[in-house]
Length: 224
Image 1 (cartoon, helix red, strand yellow):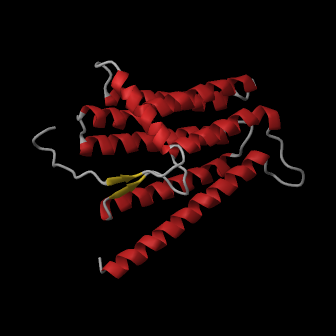
Image 2: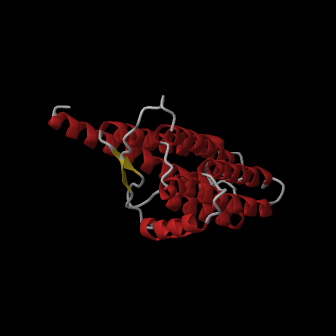
């Protein structure tokens, strides 16, 4: 760490998603076996490369639905890099709180926009609907980042779901795409995947409103 970089106190990580314990055991197992030359920055780059593969698979699905397999591979690569970069830094005791926090979440934001927007540019979902999902996800992310600053708590899960569960949900949806197809439901301008995305987006926005209201009430009671 540079002598010019202020020491940042890491917020308490709150992770209560369904797969949290199993995923942590797997990540620790992987961290103990990664070669010494592998660095957290390399893993961050790998995670973003996975997001590019996800996007490419959705865009190429206009030519053949088999390209969706590339998106599935991309999700796995994205999980590997994105989940292990911070885990490896903590495992080796080489955290850079300011740099790591800033770069990791900045890259995550671009990767999320890239992946979800690409779903909206596939034959199976409208772009405006996909962007509603991005907005909902970013709103909840904003709440998480503000809470980390104000409360010292970095919440990684909501309603027993976290980034890993979200990836699995998107992977399941991707598998279903060539089976269900992207045709509009009769009498609407929405495909089944559009309606699914609208429901998910509504849940994310509702969670943001509920969590923000609860936090604001708590801070008011504290007089903060």
